[in-house]
Amino acid sequence: MKRLVMLALCLLVLVSGAFALDKAVGGGTLFHNIEDNWGPGVFVFFGIGQFVELNAGVSFYTFGDESFTSFQGGIYGKYPIPLSDMFVFFPTAGLDIEYASIGGNSDILLWGRGGLGLDIFFSERLFLRTHVIAGYAYDLTYDASGFGMLIKVGLGWML
Image (cartoon, rainbow, N blue to C red; front, side):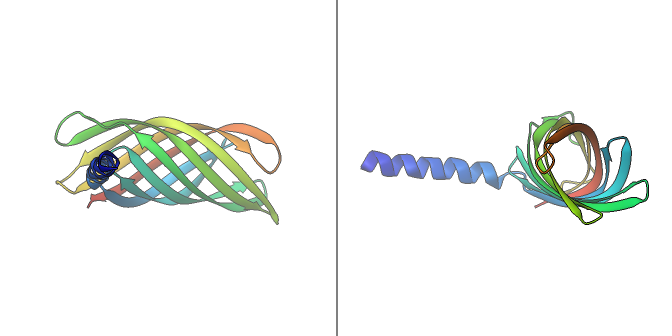
């Protein structure tokens, strides 16, 4: 029993220490591509520890006479590689779920995405975050799939 309690305490210290590092929050603008149609949008992100990022966004599209809005949320893993005190490069990969409403019809997409990012620090806390991410979507509503791109540019603040 003592070993189990000691192991639990050690794991608690390790996990809390990992998530205490590099917490960040921010937001910005995004450009999302579906079937060669680029749509602008906005996003927010929450960095949880050094290697995990949660995000949410809203995009706006027009297909011919139809316009629609999509809502997206996801979780990404990243591996930061400091290039200097000012630049941090990171490969990233994750999953997004996207809900779109098109002319009274709704659509739910599950995205698997991967790409590259760069943080440019202006101070110890303020930074510019950029992402270029490619992904493959599976349409859960219509049993279809397709490829898309996502470009994000925003400001972040280290907590």
